[in-house]
Length: 516
Image (cartoon, rainbow, N blue to C red):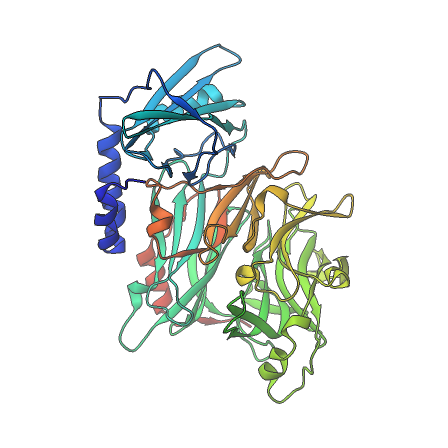
């Protein structure tokens, strides 16, 4: 394959300059009036077409940005033709792109194509010229769903490091365009003597008027936005294992469920999983934002309880729970737990919540994964309350490094477990989340190379079936190839975060308010 010289220029530049180069190149391509022509004659190629990212046969939302891609075939140049026809109006559209091996779609033409194809498909034909001869590949379709998707997502960008906090970014992305904005960047407050980690951004019912994220190490505390106003709170009390760790906002009340954890990480010198994060102890707590009060939900010494999540009606708190397979009173608790890593298996459980009294009922086991020698982590409930999506692997709670981890769906009506067939790969799939209308399922997947997590989205139809996932589009098809960041904890949002990064910085610099 002949690669444009611009690729080598980009690879030699600093990461922060990549988007500027891509934007200029894309505008140059889109603005060119000399539209490439489809060859009059071309030999049909029987081999499957290779494109990056792979959008062949995917179903996309009607409000998604252009699906730009790279044609990974040997050739000197390429022409791509996008065509569609409306079943209702018989309107036809056709646009061509190309010259290099990258397909950069004009945003205005893309909107036209999607509107005509909504509920149907866009046909894509690829023609490649090699040594003066044109070759045609079998066309593929991009299906356009009637349903739209939440306009924003957010995620944490993490470079390949295990202990460094020099630059961690919580970023929001507009899925209707390629626009991104930093919610917060640790570089804002890095000094020679102070550094910190940021993690676990969370929103109430897909909105940003009530949200949070944690600050660890220096300037530690939980940054909580309540009704649009930000503050910093210390959730560690003498009665709890730790400050709040994994959060879940109640869908309507100013209440947040957290796990509290004694967590450690170890490294496998030869194992495919590479890194293991595990709990030596974990409990569940409830934080009343208005009262600034922490109460215990569950603190059973023989159980590890983690990853709370609420049902959409707020009546049930789901979580994962594992029997402690080691001596919880051991002098060196982490060393004791480490000896039993492969024996820690979490079941999917829940407790009923009484809003009037603020109390929880007894624990109910929803899916006993340990009986199947498996372990559940990161459960999320579909907006209609019917399905629980979670990551499933043979053991443990931190499946992002487990190649065996797959996304599963548990049907609460039929009490039936099924794999999310289209969305899984040979590498790790973790952190599932549903869109607010329940028609899209997003995961953090390592399917690209086994090393970096990227956000993938799949259409989740009314019958509970996952369609082929697509990688969140970027303006340059080479973005993920050139990026050294993992995309951690991807979350759907109905609206952008309105508080600026500078305002968050001012809040983080303050002393944390102590929770009672």
